Image: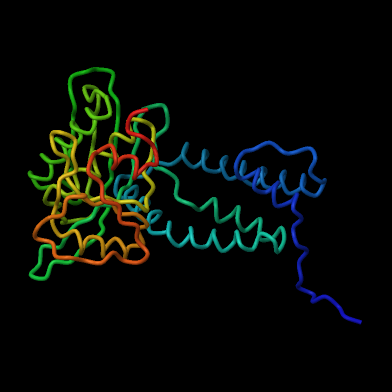
Length: 309
């Protein structure tokens, strides 16, 4: 006579798995499902509602200075890849019982969410990756982060772009390239920048961001924020924007792509026109490299949405 191991768990039924998926996706319960599926569904909704209520309480009482805020954003960004992998592992355990289901709820609650201000002030923010190159004798590709803030004012006195000088700063060339790229990208999207205020911050003490290769990425993020959309944190772009809305070539693309691969980026956008200084190079196996020629192609590749409806 055989006995089941003491630590064995009942497999979730088909109805219970479907109920869990429905709760995660905010879909209604199917009355044809079983009573046990109802318990799973209600338990998931209860956990999700509790997590959202806790988040609202924290947002209502949180009062931190700018340095703490930056540190929090960076920490959440660094956690994203690890937590995403953990979520995938727990999903594969769904058929092992309700305990795995609870684990998925807990891990899902840790996933980094878009950093966005409440409706009271209309400001939206996002921590974004950019690709760069170290200024050394042997240049090395790096992935850094910027904080981009967007606010739409009540007046129409023109685009205002503020480049913070601490902790890090932007070179004059980088500032000019970003301002031009925002104008050009907004124009391509059919949007007016007259009431926009954009603030940019380098959250690394002593770092200076040079060049124009970040300008397309920043401009696309600003337009996405203006449209109420977000760019996933595992997508990044290098390139500048021409007056015609083309993505113009920039240098050191191969080592930038290698840096994106090392940082576990999943998709990298590069200009479809190759810089003559870059030799032939191979695409890393785990990175999707997407050559783009226009701001329209770039926006859709970064957001999975069209620049214009």
